[in-house]
Image (cartoon, rainbow, N blue to C red; front, side, top):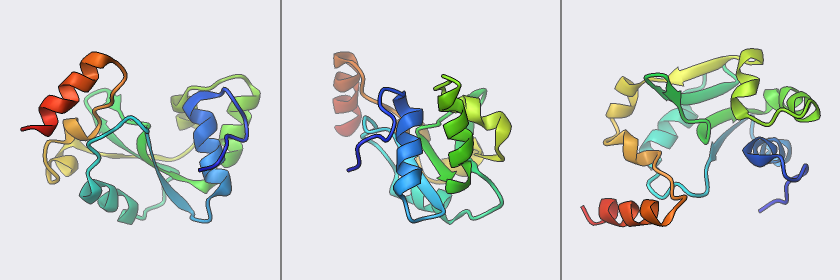
Length: 134
């Protein structure tokens, strides 16, 4: 565990810290409230070494910025956004090369919608228990 280098900047601040202290060029970043991560999908994403700065799952118009692979090369872009007072992860996308993992790719690994499920409320926890007992 590492304390955020810039506090109270949300997930973007956490990604900034994680990338800054990592020794790896590419890093898988996920939310701490995602109980159904799929190791096979994660390994697929990490092994997909291409010329990108962010590799992120996308379905329809939605994407999962807290289930993505980020390159250390984006640290200056994140720093710039934080200094500008912009803390949305998506704010960095126009300035970096983003590659998407498609629904078709994710389908190989099972019910991918469950992989991105997160627990934020008591009703989410109840739903997670139902999913676990399938």
